Length: 536
Image (cartoon, rainbow, N blue to C red; front, side):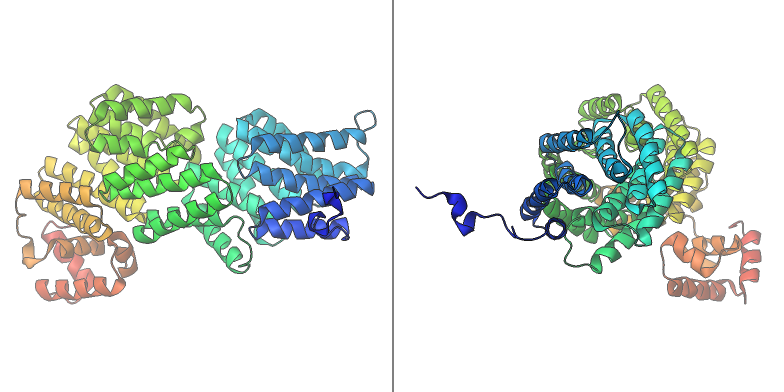
């Protein structure tokens, strides 16, 4: 029988190329979606570098191979190639010391160890190892090592504290990436890790800026399909926050498909969980449950969204058991943060106020530690909800106002509208029915615009139960009263538009109508009229 190795069809691809060329083509193949071919070419490069006694270059090839396995859910192969790298380094050590020519290669091996530690939760190892890689990166002026070490150190500090110092390190890593100083694979790894870390703690400003920059970077390189799943996922998260839910669901669907194509099942599950959250908020409970089930099948825990779905469906015991189980499992503060608001909501609805207060105390600590506006807003919302559960409407009012203000500042219309409902309930309880109607009508309009059917129906029911609002002075509508109140507080048309989710043109039209109805010529006169009629 003929030897199949003699058949050209069985010969390694590009066997006559230099190892440097093989590594370049293998990296390109991986980045453009041909992972199997890329791995084959990188392996050929690794072998040839070894045959030519170029250990530093062989370790570079091994690094790329190992990271492909590490980011595609193949831990056994990741660990196997990590061991090969370790063995190759050991061959060139003398008394535990490497020659200077291999120090950068050792840094890349350290990055692999960081990745392994992060996957297993060994954050103490991360801090020590990242510091050594950072030293090597600065010593050799290697931007890739610097950025990879900085993002690992930053995430470790975010998890263990102090958060601001961790964010500073992420900023420095991203400065290298955005300046174009890093190669494609480290660029994508740093970008995605930095965004994910900020997403966990609610650093929305960074998530938004860096996600937009990642999308632009990929748009300039349309041949690169790597990191496309992450880009769609984070784009979807920003769109969801901003209220563009249809576009967000499309991005999550695309993200899931891209992750599945690149054999990244857990990340595909995250995209399904995000889809489920939006479908639940829209009231499509069956589709949400299907998305959550798909997330679980991909190895991603669909909580806390599934617990909130069970709560909405009346399965209160299941909701409480699930959220408590998740909180027991996750001990790192940054990983608990996404669960705390849901945990507080569920505990309060079930009347277990002491448990809710304990979780709220933890959320307050997280808000203080991170200083992130969305976390501060979530804590304010939870405080308002807690005070209302104790029938202390006066105590709830300042918290509800802060939640409305903070969620409005980060342009989160759904969360802002939910906060308006708490504010309205507080106003009703203290007897201010006119302001109650103004806030509830604004919230209801937002729910209707977004398609948040369950929240919108609940808001309408409350409005109908309370009855019609007392007519406002001057024949002003509820929306005109809101605009006038903001004018009286010194807000510009642009600020009013942002606060009420209107266009500046619409605000100007409201103002014109107000001036006509109350017969005043200017904003100053309108503000004075508002004070005279107890509207400001």
